[in-house]
Length: 326
Image 1 (tube, rainbow, N blue to C red):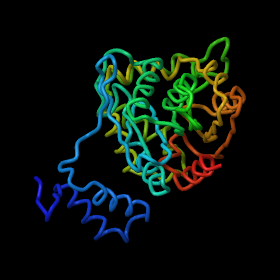
Image 2 (cartoon, one colour):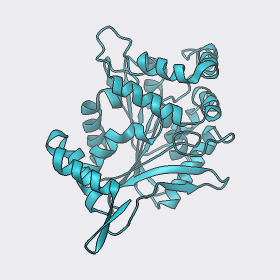
Image 3 (spheres, rainbow, N blue to C red):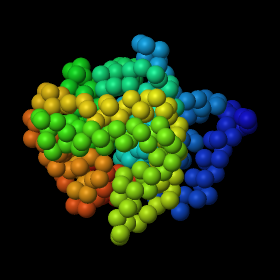
């Protein structure tokens, strides 16, 4: 429904957003209230808002969000398995308020993007990011990736065209490589990931409750402050995606070796990791990645879990801002 108002028009959604921003702004963090108000006033005379997609060379539709001034420095967020761009909503609102252009996409097979039966591996993930960067003409961008998204960032940045990327951040990220082998004796046994695949096939809906209620956010720890909203949001995002793509992605995030990517990257990279990460164990990931990088900085968060961006944004966001501005 669209309601005419003087020379412009407001959609029902825009009216609702404006009402929320005006009536409840005092209950929200300042940057959330301002972002809501901006959405209701920044886009006059456009009618009904539509979702944004690019279509890749193989016909896959990639959903993305793109908020803020096109003249501002872009920050691109890369989500973890099996989530979506929505996992970055807190950070996107924070950086939007701080004057950045913020972008996040749903990886192929995840969220609102095409539920692909092919291309569910790192080479194609990185190629999709390259096509998105070209379509949006992103320059001097900061790429931030969590978990699987951190692997995607490393794989893309190592191949990005000059001028596309300024800095990168890997948070609780899967590089250098997760699976145990002779070259990586500290990795996790392949049986761990076989268990992931078996649980997904047997009962994906239940598996997608078990992960966030347990190790992902550290909610299985005795002193944990459990958030049902965070758990439900993880489940919601996971169930939006395609089972085949999620199944394939387990191999992509666990068996891809990012060592060569890390050694190729010469721009500044911040490596952030919680010491109590039960998904991507700290000792076999962040310290090794930071040593392989030419210009890497390691920041360890004592006692924080894998999903620290959701559980502790008040700690993570200012550190990200300081690195980007530094």
